[in-house]
Each structure stands twice: as C-alpha cells, then as structure tokens.
Length: 318
Image (cartoon, rainbow, N blue to C red):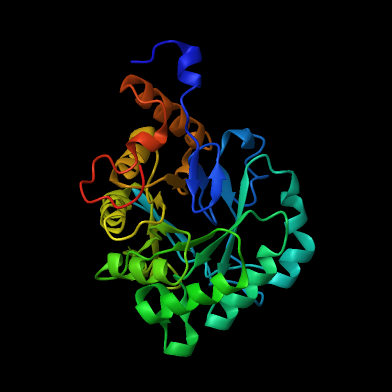
C-alpha cells in the first residue's frame, strides 16, 4: 500500500490510446467541454489528459429546433443536431486557439457520406494543433435512407477506411450502443484501420412532456447520456475488449473515480468524461486523484497494470 504522498505522486497514470500518448487517462467528451477555454477559469487544463472538440461537418449546420436538451432521471437527453460552423469556418476561426492547450487536443469529425469523413478528416488532421482524430460515425447517413454508419458493418468500415487514408494521425472511432452486437462492429472497424475505439456514444431515448402531451424534445428522440447509461457502457467495453486488440476509450456516465475504474478493469486504456462536467467541472481532477489513490492502495505502480484486469477474455496488451 502506498501511503507516502511522494510515492503516490510517482504512480504512473499515463496511457497510450492508439499512438496518442496521454499523461493522464482522462479525456473530456466531444460537445461537453467546448474547446477547453470555457472551463479554464475552473480547471487547470494541464491536469487533464485531453479535450475532444465538438464534432465538425463539411458544411455548416444550424442543428435541431429547441428544445434540444431535457434532464431525465440520472441523465440527460440531447438532440443538438451537430450544430457547427462547417470545417472551412472552423479552420479559419477556431483551430488556432488550440495551439496553447497544455493537454492533448482531439478533433472530432462527423459526416453524412464516406466522402464527407475523408474530406473533413484530411482538412482537420492537417493542422498541427490537432493531435488525433475522433471519427463520430454515429450520424444519420442520408445516402442510405437514414441508416447510421456505426450500426452497419459495411458503412462503419467504409468510413473508417476513408478516414484512415486521409491521415496518419491516431484515429479513434466512436461506436454506437444502438446495435445488436457491438463487438462485431468493433472488429470490422479495427480491420479497417482504426487505432482505438471510443465506447460508447449516447443511447437512443425519448421523454414525454405530460402537460403538453407531446415529446419533450423537438426532435422527438435524442441521445441519453449520464449515470443512467453507465452499466450499458461498461458492458460494451467488456464485450469490445474481448473482440479487438486496439486500445479502448471508455465513456458513458463517468462521475467518480470508481466509475472510471469500472471501465479500466473491463478493458479501457483511458476514459472520457462528458455529462459529469455539467454538474461539477472538477470531476476529471477528482477522477484522476481517485484512480491514483486506488492504484497505491492496491500496490500498483501504473494504470497499465490494471487495464482489463477484471475481464478474463481481454485481448489487449497489459
């Protein structure tokens, strides 16, 4: 057991996420942390592993009609609709701001065709300010009658191959939980060239406003995030960790160090915190401190020693 403060500080929390080396295993979820500067008055960004930026598309998007956010029991429903200025405006006005971030910066790419994913990935990854790319394939595919890339093996593989061809930077593909077999999607994405997988995106859901007798979201349905989906996300990480050898970024309802440790023990090399930041911007700091304390109390010198330790079928390196 590590009781000395100096010894505890020496515990290694660094991790490698498909070539993206992080000093700390805590990434801030896309769409939940802005560019980082919004939280800088409250949190030292140097105490984060990194920030995943809001997803960008080829063309500008206004997003869905309001209301777009609805609090629900133990979570949050959102249907933002990928509001963003488009990649041209983003590169011209926003990306340079990320140069001085004291943590990793991951650009997030969304699209509605394979060509969209290739084009936006190439444009975004070409900038020195961007350390890695998150491929958000959980978007409606207009060219295939509303199917979602992440829910179809061929579409998921196609988008991944296109993005892989467009950059040599670490490529993290974000998977959807709204599938029958997430492990099978993970396998084809790994084969298509992903360096790491983000598991999971939000879970589809809806809420009814009983006073209006109508859906609470203008979009009718949305993505459920927060503590309510954590057991779903932990299971998904467990299953994916038994199917692929590339690193996993675990995400979904993480609010405490113990939450994060569930993901790591299931097979995640790092974790992403999203909705929890809305409640308390200090959550990532508490998560890192709690993980370090746990490792010391259990006689471990590094986080890597426990990745997948609770998962007998874990395929990744430990």
